[in-house]
Image (cartoon, rainbow, N blue to C red; front, side, top):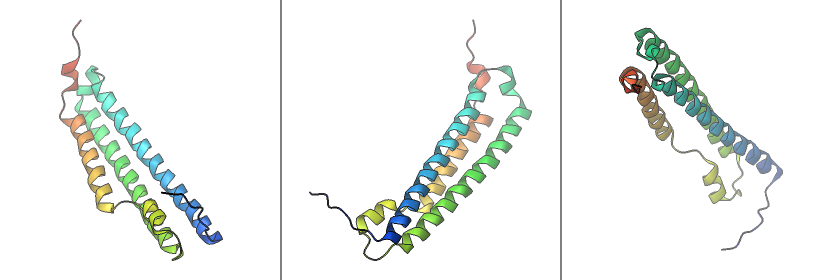
Length: 136
C-alpha cells in the first residue's frame, strides 16, 4: 500500500479544515461530559454524610440532567454541521477520506449518551455511597 499526495481544491481544503475542527469540538464536548459525570459520581462516592441527603440528590439530578441535555444538543448540532460540510465537498474528494470524516449515525450517539446519563442518575439516586465508608 502506498500513500499518495492528494491534490485538493482550495474549497475542499477549507472544508476539510472546518470538518477536522468540528471533530475536535466533538471530542471537547465528550471530554467535558466525562469530567462532569465523574465529578458528580465522585461527590456521591466521597462517603460523606451529605451524600445521603435527598435534597442534594434532587439538586444533582436536576443539574446533571440539564447539563446532559445541553451537552447532547451541542453534540447533535456539531453532527449536523459535519454532515452539511461533508455534502459540500466536491465529487473528486477521495471517498475513503470523506467516509473517515463523517460522524457515526446519530442513533449511536443518542443511545450512548442516554445510557451514560442513566448510569450517572442511578449512581446519584440508587447507590448507597455513604454505606461504603470505611469504619476506622
